[in-house]
Image 1 (tube, rainbow, N blue to C red):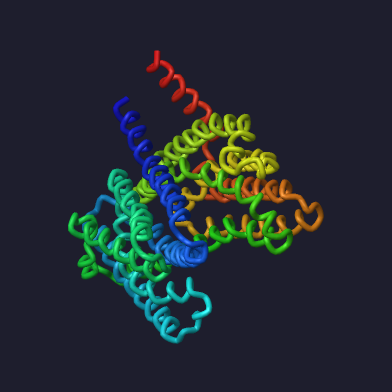
Image 2: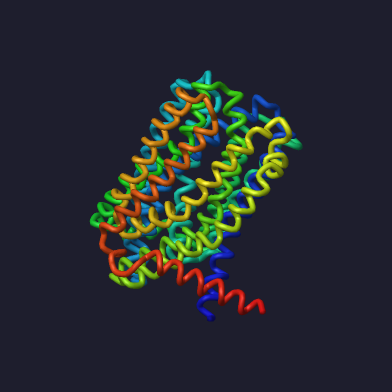
Amino acid sequence: MAKTNNQVAIHSMALASQLLPAVIGILSFMALVRVTQPDVLGQYLIYTAAVMLFEMIKAGGLQSAMVMRVSTNDKEQQQKIIGSAYWLGGIASLIISFVLLVLFFSGLFEKQPGIQVFCGWYACLGIINLPLNIAEASAVARQDIRFLLYLRLAQTLGGWAIVVYACFFTASLESFATVNLMFTALVMIVILLLRKTNPLLIKYKVMEEVKTLVNLIRYTMAAQATTNLLKTADTFIIGSMMGPAAVAIYAIPLRLAELFEIPLRSLSTTAFPQLAKKHNHSDHTGFRQTFVQYLSWGYMLYIPALLGAFIFAPYIILLFGGHKYADATSIFRIFILLGLCLPANRIIGISLDALQKPGKNLIKIVAMAVINIVGDVVAIKFSNSLNWVAFVSVLNAASGAILGWWILKGTGLLEKGNIFSEIYNYSNSFVKLRLHRVK
């Protein structure tokens, strides 16, 4: 019982580490819109989009590889892994910074201020972010959810620092980028003073571990890039084939559908290191039990929420988009079907990563990207309907879940027994236990 209560507390904290920063980020953006001229705001959004893209590819691959490796109780091995990660991340950051500085001083992007400023400022920001990225990955591996919450909250407060600056000084892209850089540097200094990470561990790097990280990163980086393509392909294709008005209509339910992923990210934050640890200790029974547990929690959480969203879809669209986007209700309801595929898709994906088979997970993601892009083009060409574009996203998610399940079964970990019965039995027991406690 105490173990179950502790797990619930961990998941609640993990959910908060995803939900609160998202809410703060939305509020700060709404405030920034009101105090900033549209041209400056647009340039800054281009700058932040470029930053997020580079961070997602560079840091996302390194962090995933670290969690796969750091999930061990061997302190000496942890030092070698973290030191190797600092060495590898440092080399990559310095190379990227050098290339960006050359581009910045060459003035190649002078007519595109957002990209031009990105080249100059990210040359510093990318290096400053490295200790933060490694601290976050280490916290995920250690299941230090409280620190993850504080770190993510601190990072989102940077948006409010820019809002405060814009209220008292003349807003410009360069000033916003500078405030962001200085705030990030301050957060990094605090993290170092709290000893949540230590760049000096680089002295423990070993080439064997560096090679292992590189081998894992080459798949996770490709997966990160392909995942980003999955998130943006709809917008690009709709914009090029149906025009910007269609993009605006599609964007409202799409942003709402992205909120579905927040609880799942919190489950993934705790599930990934636990699955990786079971695999590292060759605990196949424990791996299977953890897989069943998290997949069950995912659907116990999602089914009631998605049912409520389906019923109240018109009011939700009205609240977020107003009367002019009322036609988007049907698109949102189709996206709710996509939500039913998300738990299986995500838990299967992180299970493959935890088994240190990111190449298998990449196959799944690439297949999903191909289905999504081809399906979008066909749907628009033959129906010119956004509803069918949304349905392609459902088909894409369902295909990813089915393909991922088939790949995971090929590892032999799900062969014994009926996994669906185990999920049903666990969910039934969990619900009965909660109802009994309420009584």
